[in-house]
Image 1: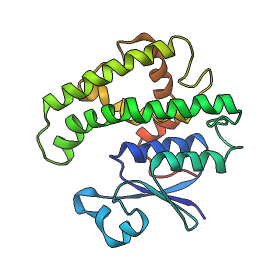
Image 2: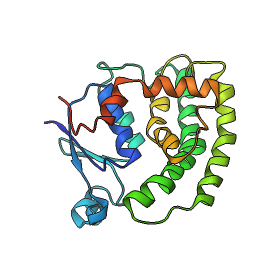
Image 3: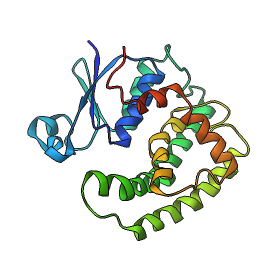
Length: 216
């Protein structure tokens, strides 16, 4: 049975899972959820995702939500296919990986994704006015955090070391919103720019951008 990804094509979290599915060469079916119609709040949906967020997966009856948890599950279930080693197994390398994931969750995504939402999703898809002051404040904090990223990436190719991991891939969807939203924060830092360009050039992300609902 083909894995089903239930989510919104507008959602950075849904795109995060798609990237990993493509990286791991896992066939899947995408079921689109329309927030404007309240499909995420129906009893049937809330039975699978009780918080009314996206996405969740249905893997032959196994239901899992939270994008990063889904990505870990996919990597571990399909460890021997597609891009390998996205979660290191050696204890010290695993520790650095977990550290990098925590950095993304705490110091990047809350600011980048909200900045993108404020200037792009909110006015264009929800019909609400954006708040430039909110955007400016989010970017100011993000810039400080990216200064630390710049130092880290001046010493190594990726956040957890010399090999790409899920921690790097997790950044791509939110990072992609920033230039269109009005921030060049990632492009003005040479090592950050090198790193995010390498990630954005991956075939997995290019496939997501094509808007293909499924593969296989």
